[in-house]
Length: 359
Ligand code: NAD
Image 1: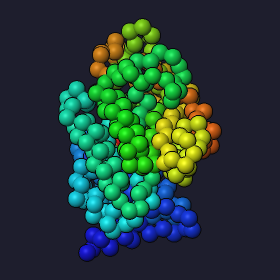
Image 2: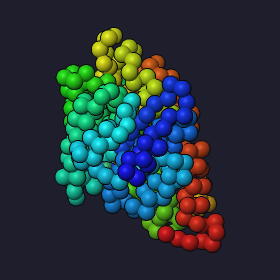
Image 3: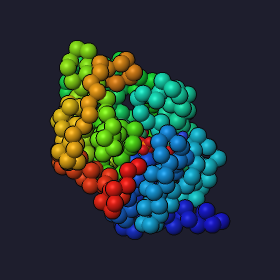
């Protein structure tokens, strides 16, 4: 009963025309930011996260605590738990599901492949099953990934490009997710929007990502490993700041039921849409390191090695014109500014400014 009351309170909408949103992966990097933004504008938000230990769970708990302070409740549970999902949909008539729970990271797939299938394939199916049976049926917005473009060489990447060369199991599970989502749209008339995020970074970010681990190592005086591509000298990524991604997610959610536009399907039917959310300005990894060195006021010790075949792709670059056209997506933060915000957060979160504590 107390659980139910907490869920109900968290789902309360505080603006006219507002949404009631179930956010999965809400204790994660993107999920926590999206949940805060939805709550701030008066939407009802309930989070769901299994708080797994892929990276420091204390960071996930800290994000969830921040959400709790704003009145957003994060239910501890797995998206594969269909009884739990059924209970949540019984308690709240969610208008939208923002499905961000996943096993992220490209390299860890070589260590623990089944966790990717479990969370990204089976977990997505469990969520779509719950959505299709819910009354009303929520519109689903979910995170795919730029990694589906795999080893494509034509840049920038457009949604209509082939995605038949995944370079990692992670990419393959996201690609499978897109096909699965499409089938649920076709068979059950679920409205579905997939968002292909391009290397998201920012405050409260993921410790397994390069910009985060580089920052930690530079501050600790430890060497960092920078990959050099086989054919191209340097790897490049279309780094996209979290605030831009959040704005894109909310705009995609607001237009989720609409069935027109370049990424959409014919008028009248529930839409199946897919969009790139990137920054359109790829930056090489050495250039990223240089910005970090400047912001941190320290030089990195660089170990430059040839990229091992571990799932990384040489470069990513988004064409974002579909998202721009359909819901006005327009990233506005350059890497210099975004990393400055990240570094400021990092130093204060880990207590550097108060006495030099090194995690
Ligand atoms: P994250 O790991 O910080 O967040 C994912 C959250 O989902 C975690 O808190 C985790 O505990 C939770 N989770 C995982 N499996 C679960 C399960 N079975 N049941 C319940 N909760 C589960 O990652 P993120 O960077 O915030 O990524 C969010 C989404 O965006 C993911 O789907 C990811 O694949 C996708 N994505 C992220 C990036 C990026 O650069 N950050 C790029 C492309 C795509």
